[in-house]
Image 1 (cartoon, helix red, strand yellow):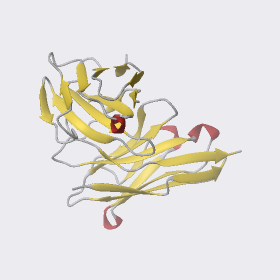
Image 2 (image 1 turned 90 degrees about the horizontal axis):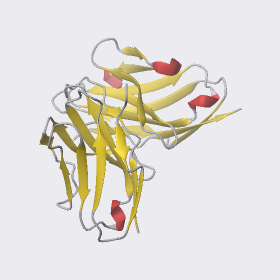
Image 3 (image 1 turned 30 degrees about the vertical axis):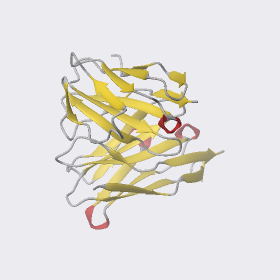
Length: 113
Length: 115
């Protein structure tokens, strides 16, 4: 079975600082990888996805993620945090042959002024 | 265009009661998914529809949970004899055709509280 691990359930960053959210997956084959953001009382919104094209994926709101097969990682970064980035972030994996998303436990980001 | 909508947004019920949760997918999307998100956790898959049929129901926790999509559009998740442990946010998502690389678009969820 696939699993997704997000290191750190809470991350606190200062406005303007680097945001780094870690995601590691376990899969016997390279999967499809996604990052979603969830603002309070809202549904999940796709930030970016990796579908076996370029390993460095750029998403919305200045976020990007790099697929590293050797490390089974798909960490999410943003060079400079903004107050509006305060939300919960979920990494998810999808098998090539399946359709369901398997999510990590989420990382809640707090941005300090 | 309109996104995925879910009704009701909140539902409070008593233990043992029956509840129905509704999902309206994006128009033209043939694939529809239900997930459950418990407090402090990531969403967990429940069931996936391709058209009218349930292509994968491996995530339904037990036979108290059932879902239908009779006309290949709106879906209803039905929970019988609710238990306090069923309290969670139930999320619905849809995608265009169910291809593995497609984006799943999520609704705002229905927050279910079983007293």
